[in-house]
Image (cartoon, rainbow, N blue to C red; front, side):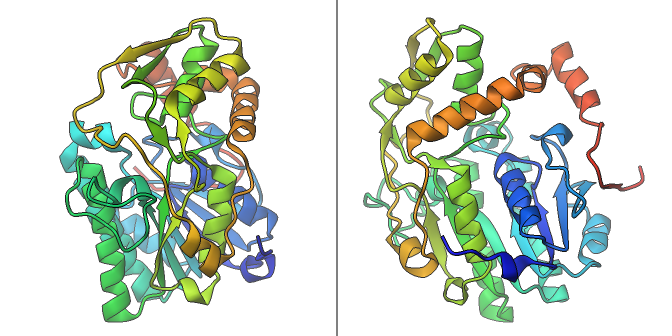
Amino acid sequence: MEDYSQDYEGKTILVTGGAGAIGGNLCRRLSDMNAGKIIILDDLSSSYAWNIPRAENITFIEGSILDDALLKRVFKGKPSYVFHLAAHFANQNSVDNPEKDLMVNGMGILKVLQYAHLTGVQRFVYSSSGCGVYGLDSKMPFEEPDVSVHLHTPYQVTKLLGELYTNYFRSLYELPIVNARFFNSYGPGEVPGKYRNVIPNFFYWAMKGLPLPITGDGTETRDWTYVGDLVNGLLAMGVREEAIGEAINLGSGVENRVCDMANVINTLTGNVGGIVFRDRRDWDVKTRLLSSIKKAEQLLGYKPQVPFEEGLQAVHHWFVENWENVDHCAEFDVSSPKYVSCEQSSREYPLCVERMPE
């Protein structure tokens, strides 16, 4: 991938949801590129302050994208770039909490877009979902024009809604937007929990010596994409002129079976608990996921760098290095004392922090 350091050097950049796995890795890269000021806006509803990169040019502000007073304050700094990664995540969470999903993923992006337009940002990059906007009627590998209106969870619906809003702001106000359609992201920095992705959950259970629960028969495939490759794509989207107004898949372009992934994790962790099979969830109707990344290659010079097993090794290393925090914060039962104490420990903020008054 091309080096975009000169484009981001000295610039003010807002990353909503920047305390998450993708956001944290993006902010770390931007910091290394000598960005002037990186503002992380995150309510820590599914992330933790200990996982935020620490650097002099990174400022963390705890709060919601639904808070107008906070958004006014954040955009007062007139960021040149906005990477909108904040979201109510993901499918099962949206099925259980559809109204909250609509508020955060619908009203939330509308508010952030309004402030981005009013302050004249140089680029607005939105994290959509390649796992969400394509349906059973879409052809594999999924290509960008082949979106579906026959979706299966509120999360999928609101991710598509976000794209409709960005496109509206592009059409009416000529806001320079790009829609990044992430496929199954994984990598260092993702803490396991009830509503989290399968790979961090499997590592957590495997390191506990527990069997890994596969919903289905294990032959289901996913297009797992390493977080570093996603960050490369996002950085290009923030700079490349030909990306403006486009929706672009960011995937690996490779299918991997769920059972093979589980076996690799058990091998890496030495887990003898094996695998157990459970019924597939009602909404989980896509047995295969595979992205076409031709458009990303053409417009961004995008090329995935990290093979799947190598990426899993990096995740395992991160779990080992951060096990005390990970084990302390894994949220599988919100009524447990572990969850409460983790909320308290997340108040130990990194280097540069701004907080809204109560």
